Amino acid sequence: MGEPGKVYLVGAGPGDPDLITVRGAQLCRDCDVLIHDSLVPAELVSSSSAPEKIYVGKTDGGHAMSQEEITALMVGLALRPDGPRSIVRLKGGDPYVFGRGGEEALACREAGIPFEVVPGVTAGVAAPAYAGVPVTHRVTSRGVIFFTGHLAGGNLEHLPWDQLASSGFTLVSYMGVKTAGRITERLLEAGLDPETPAMMVQEGTTPGQRSVTGTLETIARVAEEAQIRPPAVTILGRVVELSARLGAQRPRPLAGRTVVVLKAEESSYDELAPLRRAGARVVEVPIVRCAAGPEHHQGRATVAGLGPDDVVLLRSGAAARFFGQAWLAVNPGPQPRLIAGSRTVAHTLRGFDLQVSFTEERAAGAAKILAAAGVEPGSTIWLPRSRGAGDRTIRVLREGGYHPRPIPLYDTLPVVVPADVQSLLSSGRTDAVLFLSGSCVEAAVAAAPGLATEAGKGITFGAVGPLTAGVAEGLGIHCAVIPERPRVGDLIGSLMAAMGVGDPAPEGMEDDRTDPPPSSG
Image (cartoon, rainbow, N blue to C red; front, top):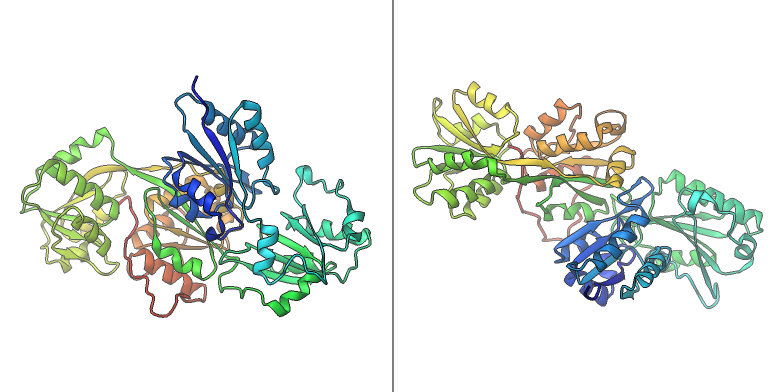
């Protein structure tokens, strides 16, 4: 057996992707496998060139893997004879500060696996700093004590409350949102002054950071009334008073709000940037995968037979992509007349050196698109699409006097949704859910059936266009946000308007990308 792979326990920092160390960023970019947590910035994961990325997030709502499974995975990968040589275990904050990195390091040592620890900026220092609070100060506090408010079985009894209360140091509690009331009660019982200044900081160092202040006696109530959510840290001590002079980060308009974007696995969208600039926590969830299988040879055979007298209507980026691939593979001759349902569909087709005769600019129905393109009723219309696409477009075209002919070129397959994401969708901790295709709606309801019932109450649902909204309505979900044009950028703008904010982009910057999502057609 050869030498085992090497494990790197890397701290991702407190939330801002720019706060990872240079060494940590380099390892993430160049590793063979990236194993990452729920608190790791999405930008760090997407920037990694690792051939394999494994999500092992753990939240209060659910675990993608247990700690034992995570450790076994890491060790198993390193010991596999043909396994990866460089394995990065990317953890929020610092691996050795309430991150169970010590346990994972011991497991590596016991298995004979070489490892390296790359420290990270910890939230207990960074979140207060971004909120205007230095955790130590020569006059006010000459020390700081970190402790966790989240313990197995909810047991806080073993903490040395008397020593904490009498230390005179700044106290910083990690993971203590749910237990804030119990923590303050124990400190009050231990004799800590009830007027001790207190602050709770949510999502420190990220655009969604926000904070509330009070005293030891009031902070739990104030945080509950403000709906402070994890991740958050609590700071107790006179240093909190310095925030009024040093200046806390001004909360952004959507700070504390969570927006879940349900999309195809292969898609990424720069159009989500305005939401993040406004302070929202944006969770991108790959929920479907578009894939061509061997059974689609008949669809390609149909494409091979198309010529200049044929009319092809394409209404999704996925349909355009699979059609372009099929066309180049089977028929590089004179092409049919291609009609694109959006600018992005046209852009995708042109990427295959195909000419587009008409591009629709609005959220028009299929028959209206053809009429605008000058296609006479009675014409045969070829429709590249997924094998499982619904019959709504077929029905609309027939009602308009056209003869639709579907060309199944790919399948839209559901992606396994991690347990913590399912919990996020079902737990009432989500403010908005955006559907980027009808197949995304179907996969979401299958993964979290509660979206269409009680769990969906209070959530603002949005759809990229009327077709997607129609699928949602059919499954019991009303989409209150539907843009005039079926574009992701327009959907984001409509959602932000519904939330009462505009895009806080710097003056002169515009978000003009128009790439729509892959769709089931």
